[in-house]
Amino acid sequence: MSKLKEIREKLHTEAAVERAKLKDMSFREKIVYIKEYYFWQILFGSIALAVAIWALNFYVLNPPPQLGLGVAFYGSPVTIELLERVEGSLNEAIMQDASRYNVVASNFFQLSGDPEFTLAMIQQFAALITARQIDVMIVHPDTASEILAQGFAMDLRLVFSEAELAAKSHIVVYGSIADFDAATGQALSWGEYYPAGLSLRHSPYFYGIADGFADWMLLIVANSPREVAARDMILWTVGY
Image (cartoon, rainbow, N blue to C red):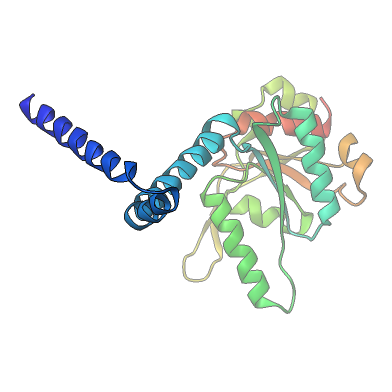
């Protein structure tokens, strides 16, 4: 307690001394004195205040939207306009609070004759999958069997009831996970078949915004932490 009192008295004395110095100075002299002796304290104090205001605004008052659903078109290039339309439509259709949660659509494909581009695409896709930033994949038919064999697709029985799957039986796509040989990359054996995705063949949504998606497939990524939103998106896309 005496230590605190000693510190308080010291600060009070120093403040009194500074006031006395400033009292006898002209306005110009005060400015020069403050700039010379308190420049760094004022600078660091201003920076600290600016950081505090930014953090308050960024994390409390106006936080940026969080990822509500990650959608990836995989296997063939699509236009930027299509990605933007998908984001806008899904934000409006399934996001209850688009100011806090939003849909992000991306596109991954291989480019024949450009191995560097293909490698960059694969690395970016793998990074987003590992970070659990992709929840739904819209897969081109030429790459669907590969995606299913590698175990990317969640078993739809985990998020849909038997009755819901039965009602969509005409568009359910079944897949099987392969056990690959580490040296050759060849499939050694296959697991049981399970409902892994839904065809877009009868999707009212994609008929409305783009042609050429009839043979593409929707699937929920196996490690998705937002499977409820993914389920809502799939039901809305293929029709309830």
